[in-house]
Image: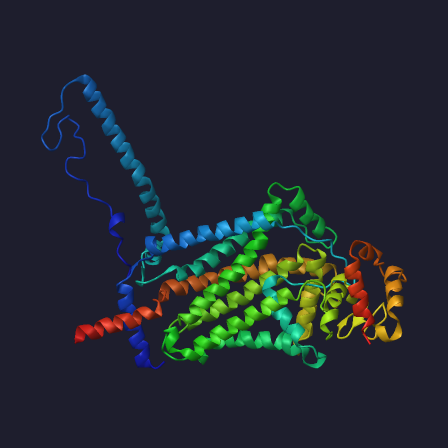
Length: 288
Length: 236
């Protein structure tokens, strides 16, 4: 069932007397003076009113056009006007803030990709170029770098909220699992992005990181070989990390965020657990 | 949760939802405010802390001590705590993998229908413990300080000299106790037994290539230099 449009958005019926009559007489019976100047003024006013009405009809017509072809309005309405339980507080904004940080990473990442060159000989120079020469380059790179930190902090806070509110329980178990996968992917993003500037720090930290992968039993060495693109840290390693960082993982993250949001809107957000106790007490009191 | 508990939850949730407000504009307002705050924080961090990079990667250096980004410090520290090579994979792969699997399986492990944090003490305490542990590991990882650390036990009066040695990056070429590379420089763990104090001081000022001279340190900060010599001389 789609929820009804809220009052403010319902089309208002025209109030009697608001539409100026053509013959100069208003619907409520008052006559307009025959003074030509006043008549002209009234005509202009009527034109303006009609134009306003037409302008208002444009977005409605556009939405109607889209809806006729996609049938999306009920879904949009179900998403936007679904009810959120009473007591929903600021802790519930951590998830959308994480999503926003991801959007920030995507946008700044696109601009960085315009100047970045993922070859071992050019990478460092292209990052230097971004920092020193490109207009607002250091600022955008800073937003990407610190955006990663902010996103990691927010995703952990969001997980903490979900954990302590017991929001991973029935019927939202699957959404919790998707969330954990998103957390792991975010950490993988942070790890693969660390190599890209190709300075000493990032290079050696990544060497250690890949060696850590290699120390795993059975699959470890294969994973390390895959990441390095061979047995040694070579010229393919950087482009491999770049492709994983900007194509593979972001694609997965975006798809999983879609699934996460779909489940959120389908199952609804939880109410703070302490509200239930209060309501139970109220009910008990009523029964007495 | 059995069928009855599930139905009860859904019924209660339906009531709570019916009492609620529409997502737009009430929740959207909060989310939008939070998004603005997030963006402001990112912009401020970017302006204040910037995005400089270090020297270019050089695969031939051996002395560089790698440091991950701060949110991997807890893993990094785990690696430092667990030293014996035979069980290193427990720190590197074992514990993180177990944590990930446990996280994924959490809804199936914790089947208690209760949601209030105070009414499921085991889950809440576990959560707080994990957060405390991760914070502890992150903080110690951050405080462990840049370039290397010498874990060798030393008497209190030699600790300043040990810090100077760690800061100077001696472990790039020398082994000191459990830390540092085995070459190209000689092992310093028992250097005090082989060389007298003044010979150590002389070598620091006038070393064999490729070791850098510490003459600059002796001139700019003789106290630090003497602490370093004292520390090395007592390694027996």
